[in-house]
Each structure stands twice: as C-alpha cells, then as structure tokens.
Image (cartoon, rainbow, N blue to C red; front, side):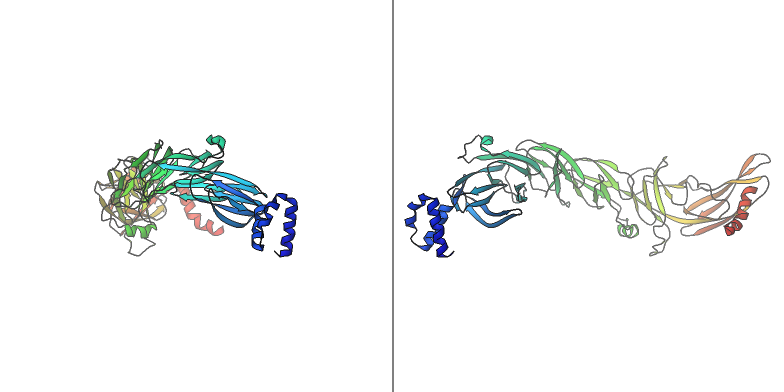
Amino acid sequence: MSSKYLFQALGQTILRHKRSLAVLPLCLSFLSMQGCIRDNLGGSLTVRYLEEGSYEIYKIAGETPLQFVSETRSKFNERVALLPGSYMVLADCSSEIVNIYPGSDINLMAHRVNFVPLQATSPDDKFSIQCVRSERTHSRQNLMNQFSLAVLAGTRDFLVGMTPLRLDLSPNGLGATPSESRVISQILSSISIEKAGQAPFDDFFVSPVGGVTPFTENQKPGSKLFVLKGKYDVQLNGTSMTMELSEGESKTIAPGTLTVTTSSKVDLGKAEQIRGAPLYAEINGEHYMNLNTAYPVLPGTINVRLATSLRAAKFDVEEGKALKIHARNVFIDLGCADHDWACLGSKKVRLFEKGKNFHFAESQTDVPILFFEKDVNLGVEGSRNIKYVLSASDDQRLKVGFLEVSATPSHKPGVLTDLMRVEPKNPGLTGASLDMVLDKPTVMPLITGLYNLSQYTFFTSDGSRRKSSQSFYISAGKRSKLEVQTFLSEKKMAIISNFPEESARQ
C-alpha cells in the first residue's frame, strides 16, 4: 500500500475511532504505523485449554463455494490477533466458525477427552476413532492409537472403535462455567485372541451387535483391540462367537485349531488340473481352507463342507484344543490317457448314503472324491441305478470299462420284450440299470466286475413273463460288446420302419 493511501486510511480510522488518538503518537514510523492500524482495525481470538498444544485457523474468503485463503497454527491459551473476517477454528474432531470485528475479543473453550485403557498397551494394540471434523468442509479424521483429544466445546459425535459416542461438551452438559476447561474420561474395554502355535493366523474381526451401521475392525493375533463396553461379534476364519464386555473388561480368547486331513496318496495337483479349481474345505459356508493345514478357529459348533460335498458336517471345537478331521477318498479311473482332457473328468460320479436315493456328494471321474460319511455307495453317470458299495478303507481306486449293447428289434406276434437291463453279479455291486432302449445301440460305463444283461419277455399266449440272461465281464478301459434280439409291438415296429421316410419328407 502506498503512503498516500495509508495516511488516508489512518485519517478515516481516527475519525471513526477517536480512542485511537491515544495510540497514534506511538506510530512513529511507516512500519509501526502498519502494525498500529492492524491492531486497531482487527480483533483477537483465544482458545483456552488445560495444557499446551496447538489448533488450526483458516481464513474464509468465500462462502459459495467455500474458499480458504490462509492458514495458521496457533497455541492454546495465547491471544491471536486477526483482521476482520470469518475464520474456521479446527481442533480434534471439532470446529467452530468465528467472526472477527474491529475490537472484538473472542474466547473459545477446548476440553480434554481421555479414552482410558485399564490394561497396559503395546505398539501392536489397536484403538481407532473416526469423526467428522467439520460439517461444512465434510472433512473427516481417522485417529489411530490416540487416547487423548483436545475437543472444542459443543455437542460432538465420535465413532469409537465401531461404537457411536455423543458427548455434550457444552457448559450445560458439563455443568461448568465458560472459563473452565475440563477433563472427560471414557473407560475402554478390550478383546484379543491368543496365537495358536505355528498355525497360520489371519486377522480376527470384531463388529458390534445390533448396530445401526455395520462397522467392523480387524486385529492381529496376540494384540488387543480396544473398544467401548457393549456386545460384539468376533470372527476368525469363518467361525464366530458373541461376547458382552462391561466397562474396562478385557477378554482373551484361546482358539482351537482345525485340520482337515487326507491320505498322502491323494493327488491334489491333478485334481486341480481336471476340476479347474483346487480341492478344499469350507467352514460355515464362508471361509475356504487348504487341506492338511491347521487353521485357528473359535470354540463352538462349526459346519465343515468338502469341495466335492453338497452338504456340511457338524463338529465341535474346544477352546485351546486341536481338532483333526480325516476325509476318506475314492478315485474312479475312466482309463483316459494322461493328457486326454476331453476324456479326463468327463463322467460325473455321485455318492449316496446307504438306503438313500438322493446323493450327498458329486464330483467327476479321474479326480479324488473326498467324504466324511460312513456306509457309502457310489454311482457313475450313465450306469443308471447300479451302485458300488465302498469299503471302510481310507483310499479306494475303482476302474471303469464300457458295455456296448446292439439291439436288433423285430416283431413276432404274441411275443413282446418289455424290459432289458444290466444286473450286477459281484457282491460289491447293488441295484440294476434302468430300462435300456430296445431299438437302438446303448453304451454304458460300468465299474469292473461281473454282470448279467437280462431280458424280460412277455408271452400273450399264456400271459407269462420270462427272463433270459447272458453274463459278461467288464475289464478296466475295455469295451464289451453284446448283440441282442428284442421283440416290439407291430405299432412300434411300424413307427421305426417309417421314421427315415417321415424324416426325409419333413
């Protein structure tokens, strides 16, 4: 500013503020005159607090949109001279807008909010606070392991370790006079999970029960997570438990370990190649775990499902104890070449509990099929209702061959083939195939063993039904061929005979 305009401003100030005449003689130089004018045109701000510290001041240059032109960091309990205008004052999780006028002296109050852990803390412990520092600027703070805050007076909202907390730091709320800075203390509780030996340990997760907004915190094993009192869900590797903490209470959970073991003969690598996904176990429908690996889990009842199973099995985990579950396996060898990917895994395999018609597991050939159940029967896709009764051994390997039946249909008055099927003769095989097609070739995969191809023929002359059978043996990877004569009704034979001609006309 030039000296001409400076002295004009000084004259105007003298006319408006006659009390400034008392200080005018002190303005003996150009520089001192500038300071003199600023002191008399502006006002001051003091933020009172219990101890030393600092806060931020921003000069507001515009409202729409909100603009700031300067920033300063000031100390608590010290008077700060400011030119007239609007300012935003920022402290921990709080803000205030102040308007400075000539000669004004604004005083704000800050209070110390302490979050007090009753247990000793370590660098790996975790305590978080989230808050909106200023609604106007939408600025947020995420404070980690900061147990003491300098908060401006007023009603303030915090998210303390996932739990909403509102503090009334106004004089009415604190019962304090405006000149008093106070200390407000909130006692913390804590949750931790012990390390489980050498088991690989992921983070555990904690969330409040019944919260309006679903917040979750994670923490490492062996370290504490500080929270406010309340009811919380704790989750670890798909397992969970609920606990309620009183004020200042500390709870430490000793997890158990879960291992799903398999035989060393199970080729997990080949299974992944054929399936396109690894074999695994699933805990409570949420967490996948590798086989033959110990995982820490929370005590209680858990559901474990194998990758090849359609349902889960229930097990109980005790606190601090190891649970090992062994999965048996069966392998169906379709006789494919090593890299014949069109053949490998091309047939579905289903497992059934004894006496039940609906399968509990489904996989494919050339892949180990894992299961926990006892008294299990096995069926291969295409062999209809023929099932193999699995033994109690840990590893079972079954081989498959094929039956090719060429049926030659004909018509003979008074003779009718009403059923043709495959019936197993080996003790380890049960059931029978469903009705086979009587007028077309059929190829059926069968587990190696001895079978009968049985025909049931109805004679209209005496109303009798007679059975005729021929035995055959299925060898691994081989195809057994049988030719049979079947007798169809005149109407059925007419349809078969006319089918090529009718198809050509269409």
